Amino acid sequence: MSATEWKPRPSPMWPDPAVWTDVRDFTLLVFTQDCVPTWEVRRRANLSGGSGNGLVADGTADTFEAAKAVALFEASERSPE
Image (tube, rainbow, N blue to C red):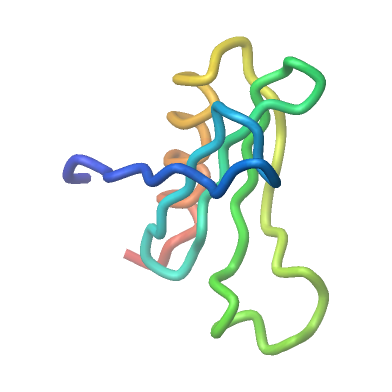
């Protein structure tokens, strides 16, 4: 997989650090919640078909960089390529 460009989430709604990127059919979100690095993989809004919130997988990690890595891994494992 090529280098991924992570973009900052808008503040103050998403306190730093908070980033996102699109990978294939998914939007990846990485942020801190109660000082814990948290990641989410969601179906992109135009693909979720309005059913549910589009959440595919989520979890926490020991570091912010680890949260980014696991979000990328989960998205690549769920992509049909």
